[in-house]
Amino acid sequence: MPKGGRKGGHKGRMRTYTSPEEIDAQMKAEKERRKQDEEDDEAVNDGEAEEKRQESGSEDSEDESSQKRKGVEGLIDIENPNRVAQKSKKVTEIELEGPRQLSRREREEIEKQKAKERYMKMHLAGKTDQAKADLARLAIIRKQREEAARKKEEERKAKEAVAAAAAAAKGLHTLSLK
Image: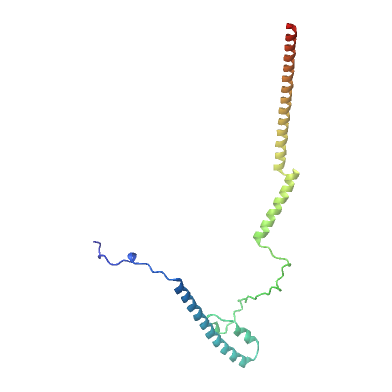
């Protein structure tokens, strides 16, 4: 028997699973709790906004109070000069036809493509070193093929001449025997 005896370990227990209905119920409860918290925050912010309006009477305070503040920002008014508030643009304000700044990668990709096109044009014109080497190799191969074709033609003519001579010799033998 092992040290400590046989006590109920965690491995032998039956597993329990959460049903989908229970998960849905938990999610609904959490959403309701969040809505309630937001309503409470809005009520507090509305009270503060009314006080500020009464004190200053300007519309600038309405814009500041309408934004939801995180953490202690609602309690302390601090303006960070380094913080840049992101402004949302309307679809009509976005300029699609204006000059767009390319990223470094995009510029490099375009330069690569242009360089490749220039190289291919020069290659096809036969101005690159590789094209010159290829053309020289092709000229040597053409000469070799022409020589091989010429040799084959000469061999074929020689065979035809030998065959004609043999046929003529056979023709004479057959005539002489008759």
